[in-house]
Length: 123
Image (cartoon, rainbow, N blue to C red; front, side, top):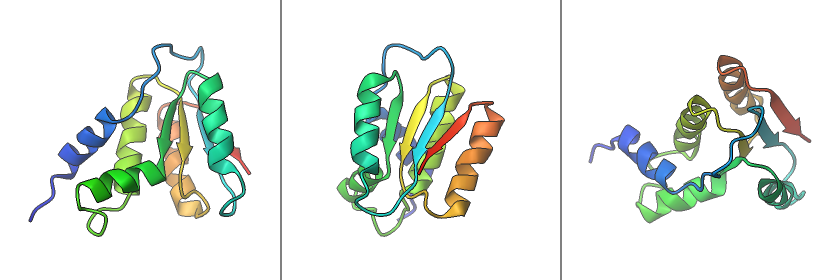
């Protein structure tokens, strides 16, 4: 079975809550830390206080499981195109994912530079 990743990304994007209000300045916030250090808890509080889109790697994995694609498509294959989609719309983001690996952070940093969005990393 051939997977249409572009269509899959669009379906994933439709599941994401988008705040009505736009921030004054576009930013990307990303937590980095060890497992169970409070990253997701902190980011969930922030998402309630700021007009940002919350992208969570675990939610991407749950979406893939619901499509029975967890072993065929990586969560990052959904997350990175979703980040780019929302940056094009001038939205601010919290990207709550596997950012311990510097290569993953580097991909996010490239997108931030492309859209001139400040990139804030919480450690």
